[in-house]
Length: 214
Image (tube, helix red, strand yellow):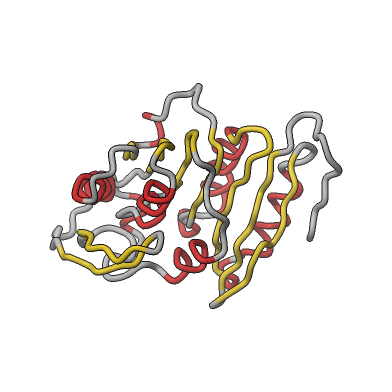
């Protein structure tokens, strides 16, 4: 499949629907995945590290899963916070269809699976949880983060998992330099070759000292 899941709105590879047993938000579930999307045969290791090293999401508000794939992060957020609205965002229409199918089969009515341009401009997010598409390239990734991180609500956090050998440390430095003042950037966890980076929006001006860990 290569990097098709990052770039193709309509993957040309066979769909090859498959059922997968997973544990999300402490529940054993069956979901549907398919060819032409990210990590169709299991919950990706980076996503597992992210889910294991982030706090429970807020009880309500709007949440963002950026680069949602077939939906493990979105489904986990929706299960944990049934009164929240989860925006599952991807450019891959097949991935979005899978998120919708999985949400429906699990009885989750609080997930909106949409393309980036379909998120209303006036929506701000109580949390962002993302295993971002690193292989789109540095420039495209930076543009993506510069668009979405400023849409965090004040006193809210974005959590991003990045493989160490794919540039997690350089991304952390870029985040700290780009989102200041008003934000803090920390390495929240390390595991299985991945870093979990936390970006907190304090507000403008910040109500507490900015603490950046390089």
